[in-house]
Image (tube, rainbow, N blue to C red; front, side, top):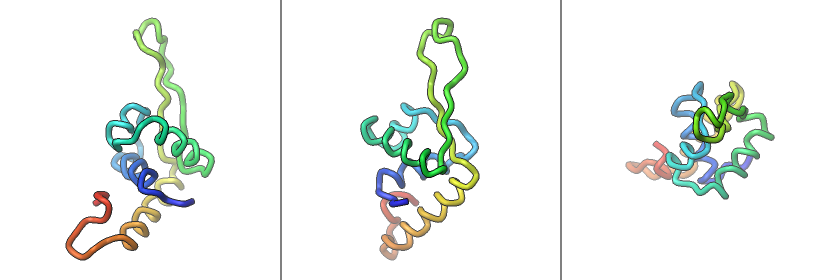
Length: 103
């Protein structure tokens, strides 16, 4: 999988707590990405088997909001994401400075 800066931001956000369910708006706030960038990347990560998604099981009328779609790294996805970010970091780091703000 090709790891772009936006993809790396999403992976880093998901790796912050790999077992946690994260929803789109939360990921947009953490990564600074717009929905038009975020959701296509999440879809590609799902197709690659790195991320799984599920709909929140709520009654929208009772909660007063629509159900959220949650995203989480798969076990293999977490391993692959760590490896990809480490390779990206190693290939872009400058001595004394964090690579791409991902450290």
